[in-house]
Length: 251
Ligand code: BT5
Image 1 (cartoon, rainbow, N blue to C red):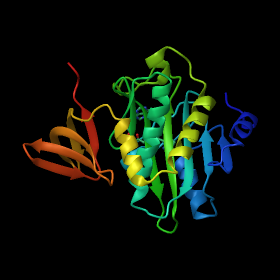
Image 2 (cartoon, helix red, strand yellow; image 1 turned 90 degrees about the horizontal axis):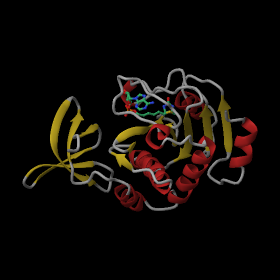
Image 3 (cartoon, rainbow, N blue to C red; image 1 turned 135 degrees about the horizontal axis):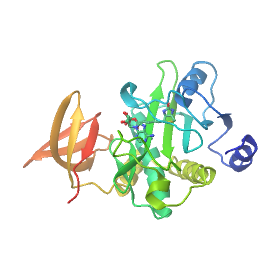
Image 4 (cartoon, helix red, strand yellow; image 1 turned 90 degrees about the vertical axis):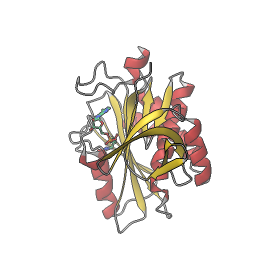
């Protein structure tokens, strides 16, 4: 169990975090974040919950956020150049991957902003904005100590399941936010380089679904704007701003 006191003490020296909200249970930390943004939120707000009853994925999907087993949180940041929004969520995924690699996990980002360990999803990220504010709510869900995940999510896993070791969630959150704080100082083109460094799958054959169409080809990395670059055949390359990628099973 995480306590408010531990949280305040641990994060008081982190410049990135200026204000903390901590909930035992909430519908969604992102929904709460968006409601704050509509009132008077400040950049550097962290919203953390032990459980989400209506955790959200992209495109109205559901995100399972079981009590005390993961890290379910949102960070509110100010971003003046809105094209950076997709890059910001990619940066978050790359920061977590880098921290997990330091902890000896075989971690990788998967476009657009999932984090996989041993090719299984342990983290998803959802960035949201409102039209009237330049604040962005970036929600991160990390499966930490689950001993099992629902059978209908065969590609999902937790850090415990992949390592056999229980994770100290506050330590992980701290390391992650420290990494974000440091990487935010870099330029967007450095973020893209950092994302690529943290990706194991460049050069692999993948399937991409975008606007209900499916494409198969070689994943060539990402553009300066964070678009996925897919090589279909010979010299033909396609760029995608949004979509879902599926890795092919490795022989
Ligand atoms: C995501 O969406 O991966 C973004 C998830 C963001 C969750 C965080 S938690 C804190 C903040 N507050 C929120 O309400 N949300 C954010 P997407 O790529 O659309 O993936 C969603 C899909 O992943 C679902 O349709 C399921 O198939 C699968 N899924 C659901 N729960 C999962 C889990 N705990 N672990 C792995 N996969 C899951």
